[in-house]
Length: 156
Image (tube, rainbow, N blue to C red; front, side, top):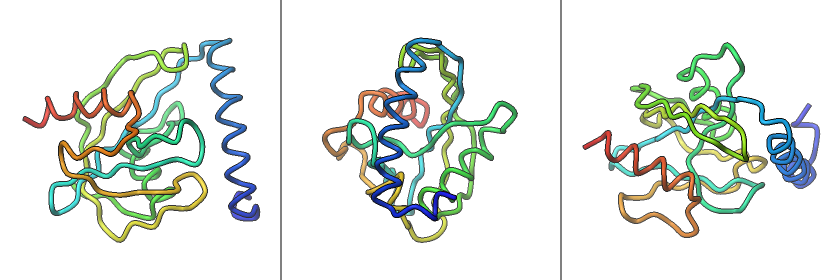
């Protein structure tokens, strides 16, 4: 269905859905889960993305999970859908209990290596690049900054 919409219209729909979801979470506070994926390349750099919705800041790739979905499967699915890549050496590194948009959120931090050429979908992800440690782009989302600090602590 989504491929039937022109990219520009799809991006507009995503921006609207993002705002509605944020307000819904503030009001009803549903508990949800998602993955943030630390995708590395052969040079040891970290993949960051810019979404077509939200603040426009650089962030970690990832997304929501269905109730019974395995975090590693969710990471593979999200990277294939949004970036056109497969993942190798996939492993769960951390599970964080946090509050996002005023609601409880379980974040699974998954580390992996990219296999294949990046092909951002141009709908949800409008930019994707690898960055070296300490060379983070600005603006970098506060949530990404927090999760990168946790990941760096675990990697060392």
